[in-house]
Length: 484
Ligand SMILES: Nc1ncnc2c1ncn2[C@@H]1O[C@H](COP(=O)(O)OP(=O)(O)OP(=O)(O)O)[C@@H](O)[C@H]1O
Image (cartoon, rainbow, N blue to C red; front, side, top):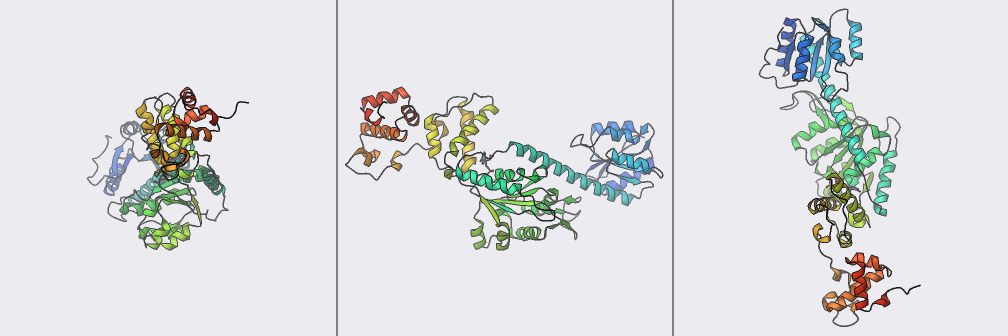
């Protein structure tokens, strides 16, 4: 038989391939499923089916056992489960007395079987259910794969006490292994934009027994308002215009892994109420359904908004806030992580250079000083972008303060209020002569570095020789420690 009646015009849904040499049945099934929105193709033999699968792999194959040129198993065995993300799902069509074959087919990776003679309505229901489950599997596999990849890559770098404390808290929370039936505690991640809440959620997830489970991130800010409910909770077929099939929501897809609700402060009040219900009762109801599904995932929420202020302004539900705020971890702003800006800058510089095959970058001392001085309002994200840009535009040259584009040092900021007279150490640079200012800066650098000329030279952005020359010129030898 030659393939395919043309799919009916409404068939814009998932593609199905019906492999059966009973032409009448195949056509009737194609028509029936076509009316339900599936784009059906028909093949009358294994050979035709193979050609179709190669040309345009369908989402699902309805496969008869006995075909003129072989057994359906041959086709099934050629597409083992896990072969690729595009592997179609198989449903076997079995004649009376082929039950053992059906069992064998399931072992080979068929998702289900339907007994002949087939009731077409039943067939449609089985197809719908199987595709919905396969879709869920795929999304979970995808998120699992993505998260395992992202989890291995993700690093929460920093040696400052503030960052260490946050990291230790996250790891301890991640290690908690609640007894079965007990919901893992919800964790709220707070911190300014770019402080690493996304990174923190992944560190928490990968630190404990849920590591191998799915990690599903939901960005409440970027999902369109009208889609977010269906994305979170799933929907039944026809629940709203455009809801073609049944869809499992992301909360269900996370199974017993982690759901990370990023930018939670952006969630509208109506959805906040629904989320509260999920957290309190540990069930979800798909849009358009009356049935509730149990939820076993752990919830982690992140926001850079001041939720308490939003509660006071009536923009965030107080009950949800208290429900979420049982355990919170605050990511410190970068300006409060002493030394971390330099550590992160060196890391991002090296990472970018390696990625683009550039020589290992060097940050000149003056650039390092500028990095440590700057208050980083955009936190780690700002630092990362700035370094990446400088490394890429610098093409391998040493990175100076100018190419980082950071504001120049304002030494006056550290100094006492200007005074017209008195010793240089008590006056602002504006009130000094050039020689006095030079002497003053060198003295301060030497004092900071306990007389270590090399280190002072590095901090002042000059060579050791140049600094030695100036020390001699200004007769500053007294600022150096006495030789042993
Ligand atoms: N401690 C860290 N070590 C290494 N990279 C980090 C660290 N913290 C943040 N980053 C990097 O900085 C960038 C911003 O981090 P992230 O997206 O986690 O911030 P955020 O707090 O979620 O920001 P927002 O509130 O704007 O969503 C990312 O590229 C992330 O990989």
